[in-house]
Image 1 (cartoon, rainbow, N blue to C red):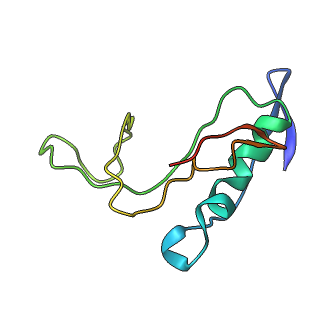
Image 2 (cartoon, rainbow, N blue to C red; image 1 turned 90 degrees about the vertical axis):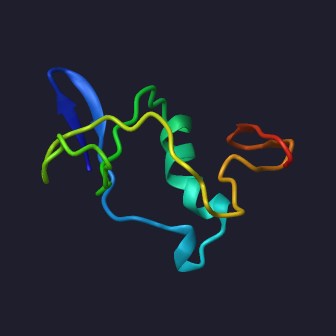
Length: 90
């Protein structure tokens, strides 16, 4: 879906692709890379996350600044150069 919010162009994606569903890292990262190619400079992602902070209640909003990746996959891994820009090898 696309449109404008306060005269700012906005793209919205629906659905999800997860590595634990058998998709490779490049496939999982593709939608975000595509948004970057289209000119997106900000990304808002929603999810359901838990917290060990007892002051948080169900439904509270929080900002996640990092995560622990328990998979052996890295969505940033890419050939050293591809259509979406420079990558790196892991």
